[in-house]
Image (cartoon, rainbow, N blue to C red; front, top):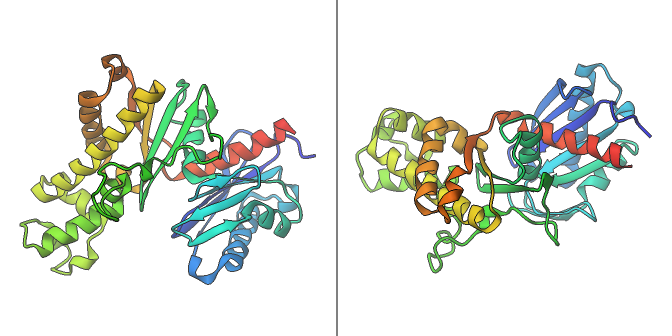
Length: 323
């Protein structure tokens, strides 16, 4: 069995990109690879690419893949942790894929651990980043969708069926229609982009129109973020709506679980920075019950793009110490 101080690999597998890093015993990233996921190529092709990325990162770190202590993978899906299976990765269009075993087989038996992508990011933040010192933490990652992860009593919480933390699928507006009921329908990066496009087509005045030279299909989060920084009323409205929905969901979770910290991450939240954190804070304090929960910290991710990679690596190393 590999020693717990051995190098491990963390993989943040996303619908668009995969980020891979070799992490040493001091939790430093010493070799990295970033590749396009290209999920339309099929499961086998993605796994081949992932394993090639691991080999490339190992070359950068000066280690052999066969000498790794383990591999940890964060994937955008509810996970059957006991059976090591991706249940439903919407962004990858995968169902019931035994990813951990498939990767372990391709790597010649290197122990492989699988968890939800936001779970591993939140775990990384709790050990190495913004969540240090807190025991009961909710992470809300605002990206293509909205993902969540929970740490309760200092341990990742998976729940009976391994699917805890799927906050983006909370029903916020019952009866709102198939694309208007859930948190991620309102708060995600893609929701903000979609709503910006709709408002511009409706001839609402906004500097975003000039940013994309009238081609509204090109609206991206960076345009929304820049417009907010310049005080554009439409962009501010979009950002505040997202923040309000996230804050209400987080406040409900805090009331239910008596949380002491909420971490905000993902490309959407990170693009909007401190402004977004403050908007979430304002609504959270307005609606959370009881008032004592206003002491709950609301903080941005510190590890940012590396949160998932490092968290996955930490889980791989944790498995070494438990065996």
